[in-house]
Image (cartoon, rainbow, N blue to C red; front, side):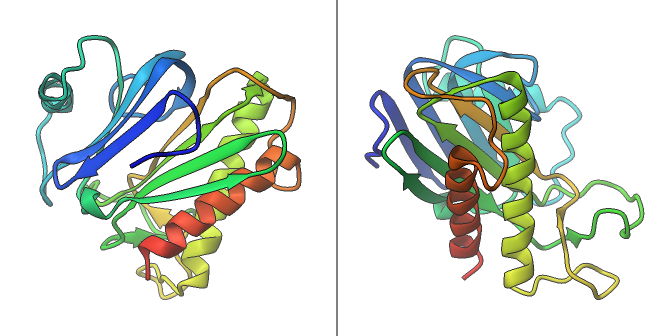
Length: 213
């Protein structure tokens, strides 16, 4: 698939999603592997079976990375959702382009603050946002908040319900990656009514809505 950010590439199938860049991306994530990285060229999202309980998930992600020919540090996510059904949404204005890639599994929806703590089920909404822009540290945190709000709004719009019967806010193992090319316009804010935040929110919301059709 060709995406409109120069030097950025994506492929996805039943094994997983692989997003890679010709140049290192600045990253902030809650990834299973690579969450400590500040820069990476590869972001992968490995599909696992329902009931997955390997206590060493890095081993499986490392094996998938080798399969893809990755020989450097990477950001690695996991999901039981169908990765061949990953949704890619693009939003842009005159200054920036934003891409959101989402894999959505909602067999075990929860409502944050209401659903009690329980054993983790590998059923996950994974979101990767890439912005062709420069972000300050505060804007990166803004971007995570904005993407999460857009995700939850999409779930509400699709009337997804948590075990207590009210609206779901996500699943128990959702993960997110914010990545930027660090070129072009500089953004100090990425809240939902800022120019960049509006692009992020629209892209994430559309990717989640499309996945839940």
